[in-house]
Amino acid sequence: MPPGAPQPQQMPERQPIPGVKNLVAVASGKGGVGKTTVAVNLALALSKLGHKVGLLDADVYGPNVPIMLGTTQEPLATMDKRIIPIDVAGLKMLSMGLLNPGDKPMIWRGPMLHSVITQFLRSAQWGELDHLIIDLPPGTGDVQLTLIQTVAVTGAVVVTTPSTVALADVRKAIEMFRQVNVEVLGVVENMSTFTCPHCAKPIDIFGHGEGAKTAQAYGVPILGEIEIDPRIRIGGDTGKPVALQGENAIGAKSLYDLARAVTTRLDQLSGTPSGPSVQID
Image (cartoon, rainbow, N blue to C red; front, side, top):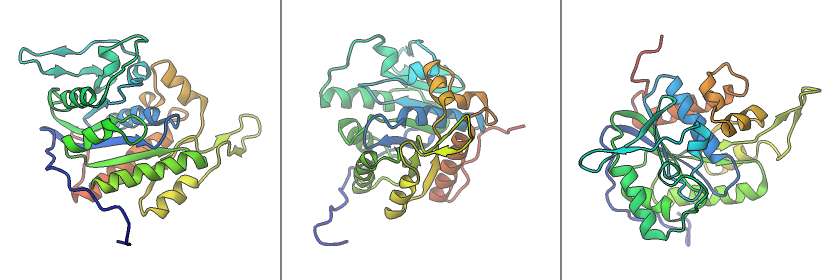
């Protein structure tokens, strides 16, 4: 390692969540790159491919997962005060947006964030899952550190757009995970290109291919490039994500390709196939 380079931090021993095979964090260096859209559709695609999947919305300041999944159902608690994630669209899901609905903002400092994230991770009945997808807030702050210090994260998926500003921040996210010894599964370039509905030619509104270049520079895979498609945005706004409609739905193929790329990386890390827990007909 070159002189002056940041040294990986010595972290306390991190325990897995009982019953959860893989814990995958979906992160971004900055907001507005479609991280939650990617997290929700990734979780749904994995579920549709036959995996048992949970989705934890850890973006406590902007918990938009309930909107994207079209639910306001409040989670219940057991007699011993354990949280029961709700079942929606084939997923087990928890979000602060279900506990604090409406427009009231969360004005919390670090210790309070640490407490709620720890509760969501340790005091929830996740049951047996192949994958628990965690939608993190943008940046490299308290929630990210709490997650990393609390549980054994299998790997992180870093979401970016091709723009220079987004890429500058995604590099910081990659470095953060490396410093705390969390494997970066790869980079996803969201809003990668747009196909003109009139001439069918690709238009690179935010640029194209820069996510792959950044991934290559850091020695991590590019997991996928997700196009700009109004149906992806409409699906999230209406609580009907495109991945929920199956792989053949318009706009869904790249998201299913991403899900397969993630499971391939997880297989490589574990040395054993992380195939579905149920048989797909």
